[in-house]
Image 1 (tube, rainbow, N blue to C red):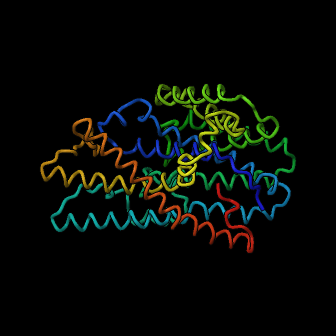
Image 2 (spheres, rainbow, N blue to C red):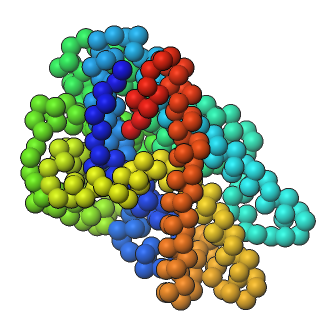
Image 3 (cartoon, rainbow, N blue to C red):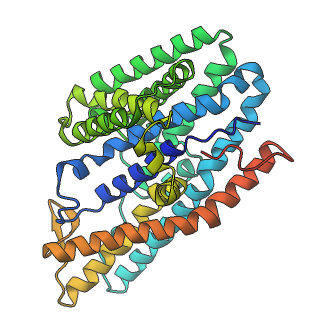
Length: 380
């Protein structure tokens, strides 16, 4: 059985960050989108990588190191955490894409936001296998943001090999550090898009963050900081400043990962007023629904933009292509209202997919991994 300790404040941060990524992806002229912080919210994907490395190392590191047979249930549970919702959204996007194509053939053009020559039937098998983010394509395919969960699967395999094959704990930390630094160098020196890498160099970007999280776990278990409310406020302020103002396509973007590692290290202790607020009510709900928030928002974006096209054709001009990208436009109050409705819809649908897709999928894979065990033990 994996360790049952839950880092509730960190769970809440995962939900908040997922919502910020969803907000960044819907192009609007609203002040909610047109600001430096939201424009750079893609950087919070690296927070997911760091947090994943931390939680996985805490829950599974000792068990795998002590018994290699734990690798199999570990991998089954991790696939069970990612795969059911991923495939559900893949099927939904395929259906919507070809539905829009049929509508276009019938003379009803609705924008084709899910349709692209990059979303081919040939890309589906690698998407189903969750390896589509390993550099096979020169573009994103289908549910674009799922590149990151594909790279996380790679990180899980690497993590399992590291803890199963390296006997000494100090050697594990040394190898993790080498993997982290090596991946960072690849991102900085080789990857054309640097820390914006996805389909091409998403794997080293993920490994950089994931191994940083593994190292933070080792450090936190030795020394859990007690910095109180002031320490939490300082860390949050630093994250906001870095996300908003670090220049794009610069090596300085690499700094977001150690900053997120510091955030995880501080908030894992839950020692301040911010942590206490995050362990209640809506922050915890968003944390539980975070994976759904991250995975369903692309499909909902298609719905919002299609509705905007229809409204524009009927005399309500709320859609335009800005620099070739479908964008919600109009008066400030209108764009803000549409953006708020989109965020609310993402949250509501995520609540449903969490209960109807994620939890049943986790239970099914949990029974396969450990018959008779608690199916929720690996939830994070």
